[in-house]
Structures are given as C-alpha cells and as structure tokens.
Length: 248
Image 1: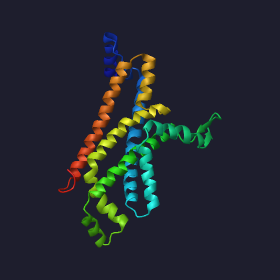
Image 2: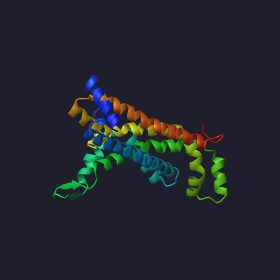
Image 3: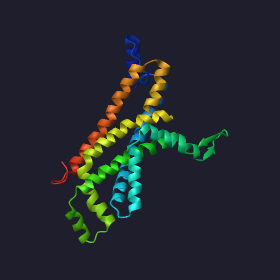
Image 4: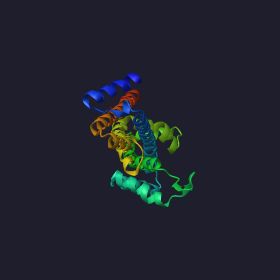
C-alpha cells in the first residue's frame, strides 16, 4: 500500500492530479467506507426489489380482486412518479411521523435512518417494474403447463413456486437485468437525503481538496465496475438457466 500511496503522491506533485483517496489516510478511510455503503445499498435493494416483484406477480394472478387492485395501485404510483420524489416522500413525510429515540447525549434521533429510507424507496421503485417483468414472464408460459401442474395435485402457491416461477425466470431475465442495472445507478439519489454513499462522500472530498475531475473519474470507473459485475453475474445466471423453448 505504501508503494501505491507513494505513486499517487508523486503523480500529484508532478502533474497536479490529486487522487487523494489513494494517498491520504483520512480521505481513503471515508471514501472506501462510502463505497461499502453503496455496495450494501445496491445489493440489498436488488434483493428486496426481486422479492417484491415475485410476490406482486403472484398476487396479480389471484382471484381476490381487492389485492389485485392494491398491487395495481402500487405499480401505478411507483412507476409514474420520479424516484427522487419518492425518496423525499419516505424521508421527509413518513420520516417526520416515525418515532424517535434518545442518543448518548440526550438528543432525539429518528429510529429509521436515511439509509433505511433510501433502501425502502429504491426497493419499492424497482419492485414496481419487477412485478410487471415477472408478470410478463408468467403470462408467456403455456396454459397447458399450468394445467399439468394442477393435475399433479399442486396447489396454486406450490405450482407458482416450483413450476411457474422457474420457467418465468428464464423468460424475463434479460428484462430483469436491465431494471436491476438501472437500480444500481439510481442509488446515487440517496445522496439527496444524506446517505453517506460514494457520491455524497466524493462531494465532500472534492470540496475539501478541489479535485473534482479526479473524483468524478473515480466514481465513473467504480460505477462501471459495479454495473459490469451485476451484468456478468446475470448473464452467467441466464446461461445456466437456459432451457430450449423458454427464453433466449
């Protein structure tokens, strides 16, 4: 690590390119901590949005109309409003009425942090699109396949879990991949409610050290890396699940 730090100190001294996160201990500590926050925010919101999509698609197939109306209303709300407005709604509107707790110095602090509100907003936002993605995959499955599962004694829920959903996954993985990539990029909006993710901390660093160009390049490369990792994993998953007659 000393070799890397010395290289970037020399680069700064000779060219003026100040990548302080590689040679300044304080900047490095806070930035890579923010990188981990971004990874957590992206990973957990991806997982929750997929769960919401799977559950919502199942509810849409139920005969109980009020539940279908509820899911359709949820989809309409989160698809037709900007994600930043949704995040503000959760943080400022709902956050204002959530209980508080006393900290170590006797101040009232919200029991729900800005990270959690960002996670909720991002999960519900992407989940609304995932519901429609999974619904399209389910509707592409031949009715005869569903009838065959029912004839074998599968309940509606078991047929969905063991027969319909695995086949629907194969069909909708490309569309799901696109939505999850968009979700990772949307995590930068958490900056607006004070979540200490990469963009938020990078802004603090370039305000202190005046290295805007350098930090923007670092952010660009890291986000390309995160998105590329997700795309690679999804393509591997898609290839492993490929079945003739279902999906590409």
